[in-house]
Length: 177
Ligand code: AMP
Image 1 (tube, rainbow, N blue to C red):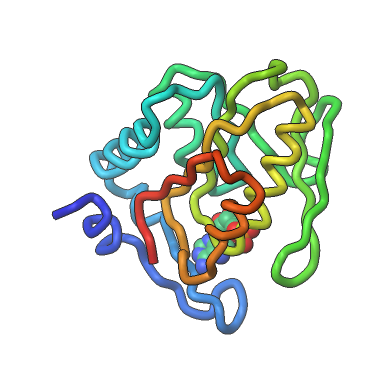
Image 2 (cartoon, rainbow, N blue to C red):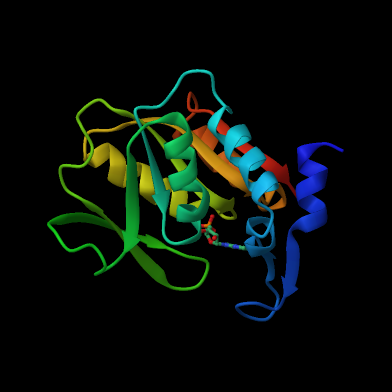
């Protein structure tokens, strides 16, 4: 069985979470299988031959695989956190969600100028979160190496937004719906 099909058999759909009309892709079921988790980390880490200088991942589900990918590649891990969670001096960006707004923050000084940074999150839906992360990282001196997701809800068509904003940056995912 392909890794994608193996994952599709394990990822759980939770209907009407966190609100009515959303089918939530629950990846906690993947984490119950260490061998499968290892395969996921290897596949996400090797999505591109050219190794990034660092991985940045988005709170909190992005941390599950993001730290493991960074460990696997032997590169620094940079957490992007929700407002008010990082203790030292931060830069932040506000962005629109489907309903309402959100902010993410990064510790200043953790990106070295010119670093090629891979952005990882568990899932790509509308793309707002990952595109905000990219802008925040660029402001801190990063070049975007690639966008990297375990799941891509391609029926929401975020791919075209990325093509417009980052035409030369690869977008990789393991499981597409
Ligand atoms: P977006 O900014 O719309 O691409 O949303 C991506 C973020 O929201 C990711 O961090 C996901 O964890 C979460 N998310 C959005 N939609 C879903 C979904 N259907 N199932 C699981 N997580 C989701």
